Length: 328
Image 1 (cartoon, one colour):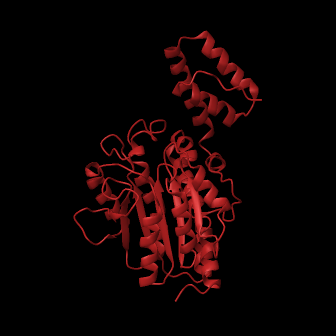
Image 2: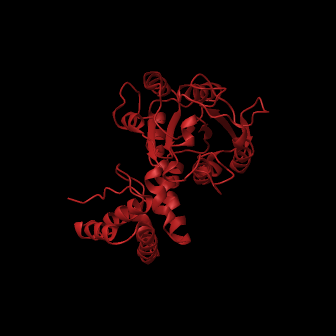
């Protein structure tokens, strides 16, 4: 049995996590407990940070370390990003329409405290918010298959939308389409400080917009919804996801921050009443703190593996959509 220290300081939590992550034994946790008793907290924090840094620095120079950090609870069918793209091309995918939604519910102010120490939309404190990270990581796939470059980009969960609707990321535009991911990121950074965060959180209105897009142009669609925690309208969202399985639409929900994500995880594994498995939930927060301790080369490898995990189910979903003849 691993010993978990009762002191919940950030430094102690990091040492506890990495002791168990790296070696996985009681000895390291026991030593951590001795350190807590023997040293003043400030000195312990210094020792913790130095020890953790040296341990991770020593290990993180290898690609193997980066790969072993980025593991999914699901069976990994594709081992590299290139392999996933090749399978999609082999299956006949030539173009896809991306739709992206950013959760601006009020809980972003506190659900990122553990990992980020601030509001997860605070572009003044964060060089790159987790929402920007996810958008950046999916960009290579979009550039590969999105032939027109237009990305419908939405806000949901803010004071103007709550759980009833969505609105364009650019508040001055009636058209949600933004040309290219670089422009999406620029628009996000420009307007994020002006959005009044609120809630509650529902994926339903965003899924509705994706369905409308499928009706207008029944090509393959990928909806990326980035959210900081569980939804507050699970029954409504369940019905929307079930309805969406009648369209050429793959739904990928990415969790950032501290969560919880229990409902979304249940949707991923247990949601019935669909024509095909059209929903994938990926908890980015599980990997964020591991990546932070890697060197630059390993970080790049790990981020590619994160993108792979986010999109792992896309080829099977596309094949199911073709089998069901949902593409026109």
